Length: 170
Image (tube, rainbow, N blue to C red; front, side, top):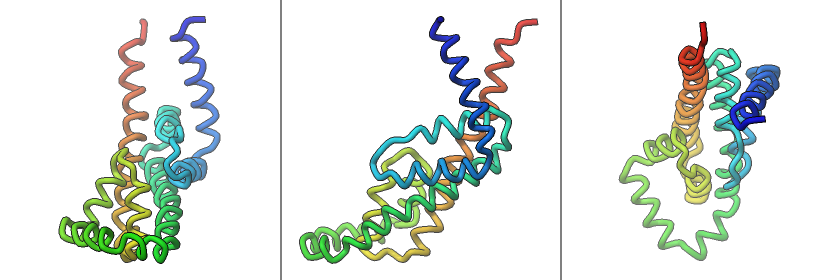
């Protein structure tokens, strides 16, 4: 078999499997992708494939984004739980970083990291550690994660349609 046919077979199998998971599966995929601190997961590819499989990209992006934001609570909780330990050892450094975070619009930093493939776990742990208000952490996290997964779902939905139109033989 050629590499192209292997990929096509994998893609078709993954599309069928992902479509069976539906929107609850997208939530779980998003959650697990954020739950695993510092470990990469195939969440981006799975959401892309689910959208290419015909699921509504808007609903898919929202479901995966909400799941991913829920998974980020793990990092926030770890940061919050380790607060006493790190504050004793790095009090001056944390205060300096916290002031910079507040000065340069912390909510915007959270949103940008959540909406891009930047390492968000660091932001979640930091916010929990310095006692950043939970509500101020979650709102930009949810918004950013939804934006990221909407972009992936829309790319999968429309990108595959566009690519297949290029290769349709009549």
